[in-house]
Length: 131
Image (cartoon, rainbow, N blue to C red; front, side, top):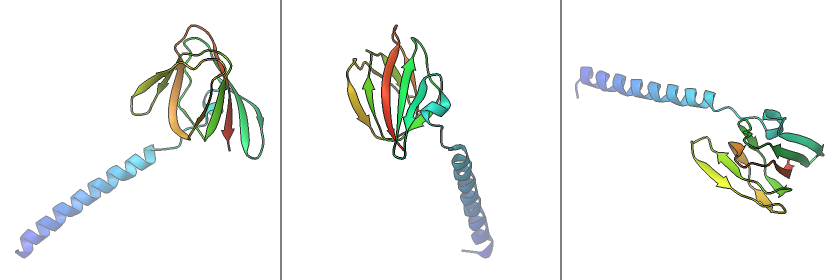
């Protein structure tokens, strides 16, 4: 390979590496952590008690109410009322859930989502989050 051709190939590859690095850096700059539920939507999530290891949160969505983007550490929930909820994920996917009063569930940490009460009655639960 001639010196001139080698220089062109090297320059082209350096440009690709630079473009890829800039794209990755921009993505990392935009990927900032989201607030916890009670920080993002204090009208929905109210901290009732907290200690060194756990936080107890009262959660209440009015009919049609949608909270703001937030995340959760590992948690457990106990539903006080029947609920019709829609979960919105950052990738644009959605899923519906219809937990009944008395239903208990555990969850792994959630990096980011939003939740909407799609029912016609208030949805209430108690959440126990690990700190």
